[in-house]
Image 1 (tube, helix red, strand yellow):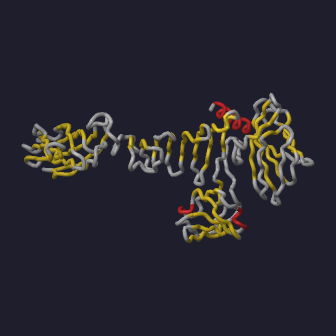
Image 2 (image 1 turned 90 degrees about the horizontal axis):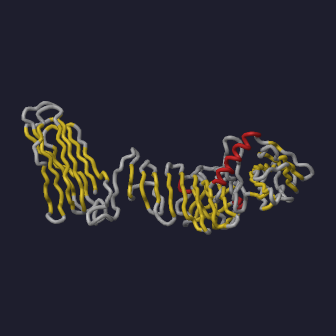
Image 3 (image 1 turned 180 degrees about the vertical axis):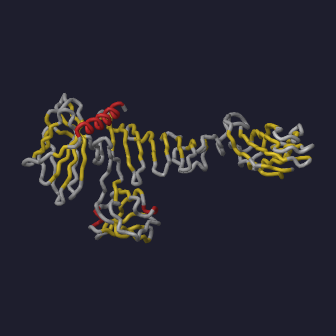
Length: 439
């Protein structure tokens, strides 16, 4: 990780110090003076390049070169010389390929950060670094038809510029049902097809829509090529940082453009903030909504529930208190009718049969002679059936500001209502609040 941080810092600082230099091609040779931290170059490709030469390098230096094909295109770039693991430069007309090379002073060799380094060209330059993945195809999609579980893209070039079994991502300009990763199953004429039961589009043309389904950046250890850290940019701008051990995905970080953020371990378990801003502990799959998972904090930072989670701290307890329900009916005059505060879950998971605590508060809002209020909670006990637990002291609500507080532990059965009500005398005017805590 330190090496990655140094690389990024070096790229930023080096590029900022000099800016980008346009380098000419002389008789097929490109020569770049990389002395004095000059590390960002552009080559306008209008002829075949047979050699790329770097002069005055320093140990560990990293250089960014952008090769821009002219409108004719088709010009190959051969690095040659002391360049190993040479990057591949796109020959498509008007395309841009940005490559990174790192210098090893001991072997006097430049290594392309590619094929186990950068899987797709990047643009790394200036203070505001931009990492971009070029399209998989320059084709413009005219329409997408759907029949028999197959979606067919009709384009302005042969085969939509794609091949059988190629994996692509369709961008956000097409309908939502078409967006995301697709695998090409057939190409013919000016069309390419993939499996889908819903994707269809008639609002074209759609330009710059067929993107790569690949990782823009991958950092690997040369002595352990299967152990890598990979940066991926999805079709909708979502960012992923993935780590692999021995070729197997071990953990990943997802920062999605729909506001989901997740840290996931492949061995199970993850920490997710969902689309609503709720934060939850989930299994090995990302849940865009913490609806069916163990919610830890809501968007206001308040612990709210831990529904449906297995009990593990005793027969009726999970060992974690959570606010399961609240009742704030506002200003009340007289009795408050029996109301269901919470319905326990079925089974023995958290929020089902087990211990709960009901807390009650009443505050008089006006002077009312002889006014009183008593609080009652009605629930189903697993052993005794329906029972009522009444606040043992009648609260005096005769004077504004008088306050009563009461908490009672209960053991409630599963799949049953926990209800609350007030019983009053002389029509008190008061506020009251109720909170149910799961144990």
